[in-house]
Length: 395
Image 1 (cartoon, rainbow, N blue to C red):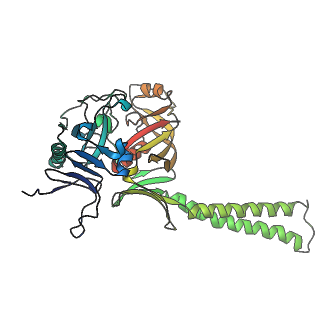
Image 2 (cartoon, rainbow, N blue to C red):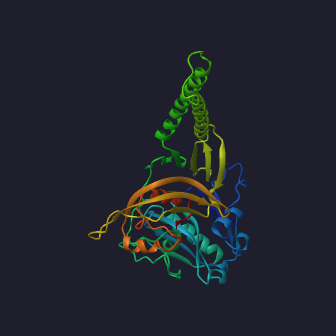
Image 3 (cartoon, helix red, strand yellow):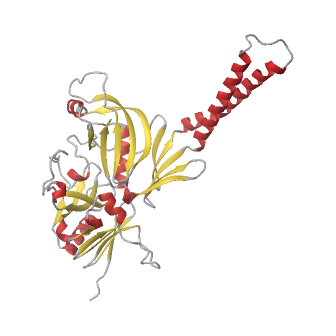
């Protein structure tokens, strides 16, 4: 009897195909006239699980991306309340190199919405994978009331819900905000293809205006400096003044060139869900300076100075904070700068804890109740689209 292949569509242009003996996660959808032109990101069969090189590197899967079913503790499908969507993945069995702790490997997610939306697809996708590799299936249902979430510093237990290892757990559930986000020199907007970081229009117009103004001033200083020497009129006193004018004109020429160059290399950061890549492209020249496929992104990094507040916490309410923030992507080899956002104002709902945590330098999972600012929400949205982790680094 021939196996019939079934198809399930997930968020971010991912496709899941499965039958009784095979399960595959694909980047895109197969074309009927070209069925073999789409290599799978993950392919599972009863005796093995094979991941593409980029996917394995991004998810830090050992064994060059090849697992046996015994390496998988369970297949998990769960509701993530912080992003209001269903997700599925694998709990990789405990190993000596991970201090005998299980580790989460995300596979797919579905669009945000009500708990009933996409539930059947997510459950079927998880059950079919568990059936193919012969491993347990675990469903984390959507809570009907507040869920007791574990701290990100606790070791993962076998019954820990998926969200405790996939995204930062929140003691106080802060709903992630959605674009647009406006900053001093940057903005993050949602577009049909995904997200786009752009220099603020006022910044671009200011840079474009400075170029002709500086050029005119440089010409004026050159005319005055040279004219005072060649006009035949009485010499200018003191004698060094024309030369000072020429020096100022030369400095203005350099500034004009630098501002013109900065205007030409002004770049947008496009997070393209259609082709599943992040790329930095020149706004005016159309040149792509760098690109990173989604599958190679290991995590989003929010690095910042310690948050500080100008007043004491009163009444147990949120505290207004200010911090300088930079956003990067890490692909396992290097960090790619997304945006330097400068001083960002926001709120902290747990200032007593944050004040002490900030004394300990190093990386930890981002919690929005600790840093409730537009920059941290923007980073969270990026991580959701990229379907990857998000980490905080205090400089």
